Length: 331
Image (tube, rainbow, N blue to C red; front, side, top):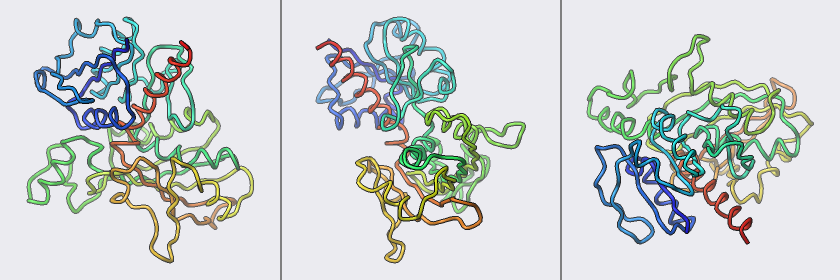
């Protein structure tokens, strides 16, 4: 009997997780939905069942689960993930709380697998996920020396508050989530500024890339920008390869991979856009060209649905992988 919990079930990402449970045919004999006290008592349809959302607290977190997926913020994860873990669950967490802990796996299923030194698995930053999915084929074929990211991140990455600011800003209303209006504007500011001038979001991308790709000597830098787009992040990747490559060889590295959609025919206006990525499971890449200012360096444009592959989908893919591994182990 497999017992699974979803923490943050009524949030933007939690709602997408529920959709992903159905899409990935997650088989759970018992499923429990947790939320804050404000949302407790709501009824939600999941896998053909009507479930009542339960308040997450110290007592309810001590219930025995096989798997727990969490998308309720770092503070909630810091408090409750260890409790679930202590009571035997494998916890897959979508917050930034555990990502850079040495004993915690940071997983993108197309790239790496958990070692399970602990019972907590971290889901990476949304922009990092799509970026490393694009970088992994290049690492395998050519090796990587340097990566420079510039992101164009949708407001849904800030949850319902970001969407509200975009919609209300079009009516001339003041923002409540961002420090400046996002409607008709771009903000070179995601998360808090650190002493060195980088934002926490930029540092996340830099550190997480090295950890997921298992390459601590990789030179990585980033600038993260919020744009007035509802959903799906775009990332410009400027990458220096270790071995000599051509534009066509880079393009071929992406071709025929089930998790990557190659859209690279600029003469016919074919390239990835966030609008086309929304609702799609793949990471899209295009605008592939050589950077003539640096040796063996290429520009790549990359888009993906930040609520799917960047959050809920990747989390549920990890869950599916763990459940299948356990099933094979028990056979």
